[in-house]
Image (tube, rainbow, N blue to C red; front, side):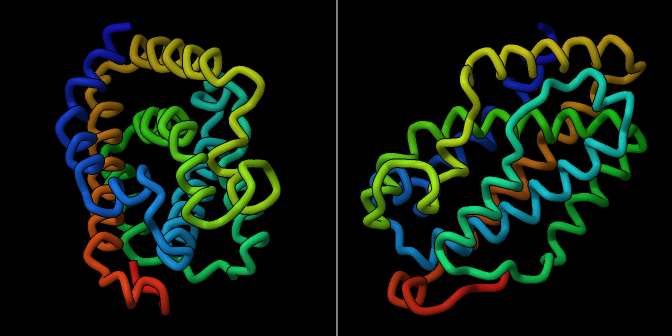
Length: 211
């Protein structure tokens, strides 16, 4: 599991910085507005759609990666439940894809998978405060599927992700590309959360922002 230790060490600082952002703290304490939440869901849908498309297009990665409930599908359901249409894919998502593709190692996308699948763990703790903030019942089908649809055994799924990462790392001459992709993904998520954090609360409740 050496690759997991390297991933944890390389991403620890940026992960902590995300958790300290005002928007992150408001989510955890159930104080965000519906507009902020839907802005986040729109952006996350573009991220997960892109990641899942790339994952499925890489046979070497797809065969080793565990079957996980589609987070893109969950996000699409949530937006539909909340009556929000998907916006156009923002330019920074294209830039995120280009940054990882520039590593010239298709299996480096496992690093993005480490971040995006790992976020399921945090989602389990966000569901209740978000339900409170949005005045929603804590259940599937009301706009919280992204946080609640984690399969029958989330812990086992995460162990399978760790095993896949270890197997992939042994097949690469330079597993640093996996670590680099994870850092790139976290950095882009930090920018997203930071941008939402800087939106004045009274505006956040009225209109969307370009992210």
